[in-house]
Image 1 (cartoon, rainbow, N blue to C red):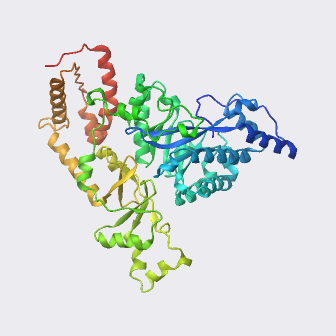
Image 2 (cartoon, one colour; image 1 turned 30 degrees about the horizontal axis):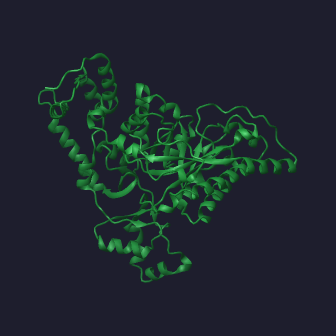
Image 3 (tube, helix red, strand yellow; image 1 turned 90 degrees about the vertical axis):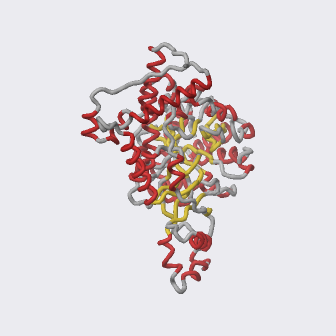
Length: 510
C-alpha cells in the first residue's frame, strides 16, 4: 500500500520484536495511526475513472520518513503480513465509501501488497484480500493486486500458482514500479498481469526527452502484445499527459489528474479536463495510424455473456450464431474475461445426459471450467500490432477486440488472415515501380492531407521531409516489416518533429 515514489527505501530502524505484548502494541498503534488516501486511475482519452489506488498515510506519525521505512520496520518485527491485512481492510473501507461503487458498473481497487509478505505466504495474503472484497458484496474482479519488485528478495516463482488461481476467479494483477526489476517481466511474459504501471522515473519530463519517448513507446507495444494495459504513473503536467497518450498509454495516474484524496467522496467518476486535452486539434498531436476501419470490416460481433451466466445461456448464444466458434465472457465492467469454445461444450450438448448434468447443482453449473484465456487488442491499434498480439499467443484461435478496455468484437483466425493479406496488398500498391520500396504513395498522401488541412484552417505549419539514405540494403536483408519498424512514424516522427521545431523556420500556409 506504499505510494509510488522513486526514492530508494530507507534502512530499517527497528529490530525484531520478540515479546508478544510489544508485537500486539505495534499493530494496535498502526491501526490507530495509519489511514488510506485514494488516487484515481483514469482512461487517457475519456477521463473516466477506471480504478483508484490506495496509498498509505500516517507513517510519519509513527516516526518514519517514508512508507518504505515503515514497511521495513514491520518486516524486521516479523509483522508484515499482519500489517498488510490491516492496510487492506482500511483500503477496502475507503473504497466502499466512494461514490464510484454506488454508480453501478465496475471500478477497481488497486491494492499494493509488499513482495516480502508474498514471498512465503502468498495464498494467505492474497486470499484474505479477496475475502474482504467478497464480504463487501463486490466480485473478485473489483480487486487489482499491485505487485512491486522494489525489493530483490521478492521472487515471482513464490506466487505464480496463487496468481493464476486467483486470476481464474477474476482478480486482476498489476506490475507496479515497472522497469525496476526482472521478475515482473516474467509475470508479463506468462500473462500473469493485466496492467503494467510504468514507474514515474520514466514519465517525469518525458515531453522533453527523446530517450524516454522511445522507451515508453516500445514498452507500450510490448505490453499490448503480451495482453496487458499500460498505466503511466506520476503524470504531473499537460505535456507529460499528452506524450503518454500519444505514445500508447491506456491510462494515467498522477497530480495532473488528481492528488491523493483523504475524503473518498472527493473522487469524481470522470475528469473533464483530460477529455478536453484528448480532443485538441489533430495537427497538435502525432498519432499512429489507426487500425479501426480495417478491423471493424472483418471482426465478428458475437454477443458476450457475463461471467455469472449459466452454461445454458452460452449454448443459446451458440444456437443463435451457428457459425461462431467462440463466445466471449466479460465481467461486470464489460471487460473480457476470456472465451468459451463451442468445441468444449459439444460433449455435454450432444450427450444424452449432458444437459441434465449441466443443470445438476451438485456438479456446479459454472462457466469457469470452460473459460480459456484469449489475447485482446484495442480497435485503434495499428493492424501490424494486432497481428503481433495474435502471433504472441500461438494457442489462441483469435483475438478479442476492445474499445477502452470494453468488449467490442472478435477476430477469428480467418479474419486475421484477411488483415494480413490486405496489408500485403497495401504494401504492394504503395511500392515505387522503380525501386520496389514502399512508402512513396503514403508520404505523398500524408503531405497532401496536411497541406489541405493547413489551408482550410489558415494555420502556420512547418513541414519537414526526412529521407533515409542507403535504406534498401536494410530492407533487402531484414525485410519490409523490420524496415517499417526501424523508421516507423511513432518514434522517428516525434524525434524529427522536435528536431524540426528547434532548427527550422516556420513556413506560412499556402
